[in-house]
Image (cartoon, rainbow over all chains, first blue to last red; front, side):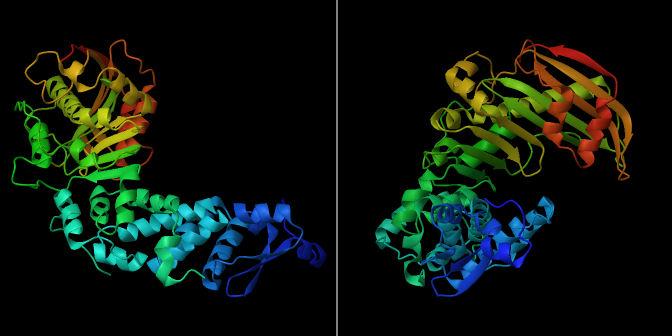
Length: 167
Length: 302
């Protein structure tokens, strides 16, 4: 467990870890940032090796999670600044980006970010057409047309003429 | 790398539920049941829900929908409808069996006071009323006939207590059927009134046998609301309040209601800040009123 920021090059080397994405790119991350992920913390406690290979997280997603971890490990930032960072972090992101981010935060056990991303995904899902949900989650409709009609009939009141969105 | 094609299979149930719980809106969730069989199997496990009552709709042709019934029970407190309605909130919620936190948002407040009068109330319930904070005032710009005497203030108070106990009554079936429910809020989009039942209150309500016993008192309004117990009302008022934002309130009244001999021992300050928060025009007004002279009125059960 590292409590202070590294100063010289020698300690910096000791207190950093290298994280490799499934695309093969490597990211140098301070240990104080890495241990904010419960999974990474466990790995670091168990092995000497400072290289961690994540076989199911791609470059783009990993870079985002690391940006989040580094910001939250920065003792120079106030909690208020961190909170507004969290909001901005998800605000402009597409559903297609968020859905991989939520998987990565689950794998890495970054609970706080996981909740923030899930909330943002949920906000986007509201008032969307069923077809939109199928497309964005890549879901095969496994109902027969009759079964789907029956399901819709059961909750007919939820299908009023409210404007539903498809983008 | 997670490919586009198998994304949904990769998504673990707990994360999927995390997202559904944040969707929370019951209409969206019910529509999602038709997305796929997996969606359909997970939607009923959502534990944090919001039932937003948009407007009166007719769900089917076999009678009155619960939404219009809701309006009847709240707006027309005198009407007696002995029949169980075909489309009640509990019926809608029957599709969910793990609800822990539920908020029901009604389209509007229930009270229709004279023009220019605003009222807000916040009530806690167990099997019966535990506390209620009521704040009412007249808009300074509206000319008013009477000067807001004691009679008016008592009418405001009773109206709010009736509205609160009507909403409480409406929830009886939901509370007895949703065994995991530990937090229930009923409010409205106009932000007029809020009923809150917490874990202890919900347990007390269930242990008392639900709505049957409470309403078995043989009075004419028994189908519409629960009994209000004998209460002590601590009342404070100011003929005129000028607030920092330039707003003027006339006849500003703060009433804190507690049952006589009840278990609610929280201080006035605590109850008021729970009801109106720490910031904003109402918080400022009630804080000023807390410093005013108060008097207590007692009222029998009704």
